[in-house]
Image (cartoon, rainbow, N blue to C red; front, side, top):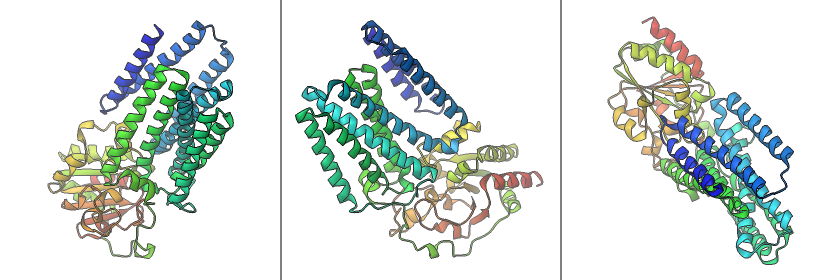
Length: 457
């Protein structure tokens, strides 16, 4: 019965993951996955009782109460703009928990395992601690606590390669000698590797890094499950590991980057452009009234949201503007780039929070053929994902990255605080084109002003 219940939990995980594949079923998928996790925890506790194990209820119930309280508070309090950082932190906690499971087994056994278990223990410790430290470096970069620019480590990739080689040596020592000290040293070194591996990666690549760390947290959980023989942990970890890896490669494809390039290229620094060359050309400045007039006489409008919209909490303001346009019979849609925001699906979730219909959210392939048929494209806080240099300039560091080709529309309106570059650190020729109007404003304030001006036309 215990195995059947673990299987039921695994099935709920699978259906939950499947549900997350569509915005319409995502809420249901999340509920199914949560139910699966509750079932897995309940069965694990029951199994302890059934095996007449010494159950320390104060620790179990206390941990459950603390964890549930923290989870509820975070779910209620954390803004959508901070969701990427929260996901990074969750990845780190997942990896850390898996490493602690393996280390606790080491303490109980003194490091004496059969060969197969020793290998799995070493993997759990190494992958879990790398995920822990690497995820919190990513958290710091996303939160602004650490610079989003690549930070080169002394010796570069050679240093990381040497540290990885030492880690492999420590793992081999632990497996061969059953010495608990080797595993603890492995965990300590892996913490350092997590930092040295993520620090050289620029903020522009954080969506890919978060996906990869998510995959690693799943692998760490699966190996921890193998250490303690827990079926639900093995299946759940394997699902997360596989799904995260698939998403990592999809995100890399959306940026026209290989995983090796993301991890080792140090992309996102100055991008080869001198800071003095950015924002020095003349632009067509617009007022909210100018933008309102352009929108009022349009037949089709496409909105391109970016991280600036998330920072300004402008999702409700853009919804109000869209409803005003739709009230005039103007078709309004949204073009979502796969790497817009700071994590996969960030913009989709943000717009869904404002009750914007899923049917008007277009992906890259749906959007690009429509821009040439569009009267006005409204770019809100996006930069690199609409940069024509990725298409036209073979010397650009983002050349070849698929972009939203907003410059093909009759008029492009960009709402942005300034001409500062995006995470890629390069200038955007879109800003200087004759068909582009630049409205320099906070996204929410600018959208509110446009909506008010539109009402007077």
